[in-house]
Length: 524
Ligand code: HEM
Image 1 (cartoon, rainbow, N blue to C red):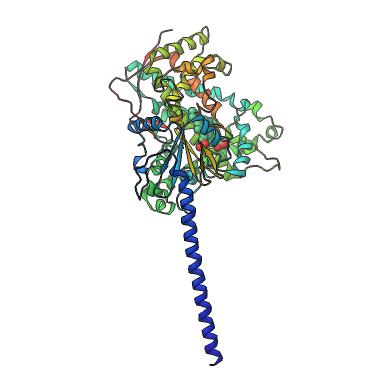
Image 2 (cartoon, rainbow, N blue to C red):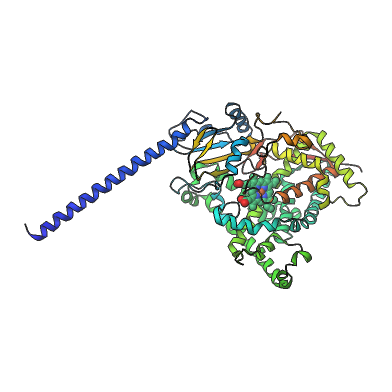
């Protein structure tokens, strides 16, 4: 045997050994994965939940639809399983839906982050679907990045910054009241989401960028408003369509291409608005350096971001600033629009409570020559506040949020493994019949006096809880109190009897065809 053929034999032996080792490795990996998966899923088999399991789509076909019928379905869940249940998003992806304070407390006080992609990195989580718009802003980021942003942004929601916004919110309210007045004079209905969103967008643009868009008069044709609105809707549409959860497929669809065009447009506008504020701050450099800017000017949210510095004296990058400004607009506009619209709806539907709000505001404003609500007035509107809270309980503004477990957690005696996605269903939490008496009735008194003592601290969570609670909740409540109090002071609201209001559950709580309201001008 010559040297060459010995060498060839050895080489082929080496190759075969390598191939056998590789095959054994692959088989071992598959067996381990199957074992891991069986151990993982075993944990869920004993959990409460639907059992009609389909080999391809798990129990997704039984998931409640995002409408009236779906909400009824949720009530049936709670009769069967009062704390939580497990759903199968396809054959291998279980997720938990929880809606009892004892379990919600465990998750929201843990360090469980917002979900990240799963399915080997192919499938975007609900939050990541918004990442090309909002980037790693406060809503979507996790870990150290989130903690730094939260520290830098907290001063933007300090009372010193929020106080002057009350004027802006009242001025936007003036335009809204005028518009409602014109409808009232003609005996015409107005649509709550439409009027509310324009007013809230108007004040938000001024608070965020010191930008006067005039959008309440230019109307829904404002291209920026239209695009932001369209992004909010497209995000929810994508979520409802499982095959669009895979990024590379989504980018090829016309929906994905439109989403990108919209994001590009919104980014151009916010970058332009930020650049204008940067110029303004340069012109007022002295005051900025002495920390006196807020004494002379109303500081916009972006001003706070542009001047923020962390412990190492490092400011935020232009991209970080844009992400936070876009997050502020997204979080601050759709949510408050829903909360305002459902509060007005509730007061029109249950007029006995509207009368009590009117009495409260009438007595607060008696003898004044302006109907503006002042900063000092906020503590003197307890009934109005209770009505807002009850409205956002009944029609929960943010119906659910999600987390991903990074370590095993025991819920009602079931050990739930790390990696599990958990949806915290606030709408169910707010309607759980084991917690609330007459959960479908509008009873603002639940939020007054001693009745408050009956509510667990994790039972009513419109703004979530724990370290990732809503940073804008005071801003939102101020805005709502101002608008609800002033609208009820000037008008009596009634529902249009010819229009049926059907609820629709998107990223925020909406009405399928809006809410039509009739306003009657009150005599003072
Ligand atoms: C009625 C109005 C509002 C409601 C019901 C609401 C509700 C919520 C909820 C439930 C969360 C938790 C989200 C999650 O964990 O996935 C949240 C987070 C957040 N909200 Fe609000 N929100 C409202 C208004 C606002 C406003 C006006 C702003 C800003 C101006 C805002 C900014 C944010 C931000 C930045 C976060 C993320 C906080 C973090 O993760 O650290 N929200 N909000």
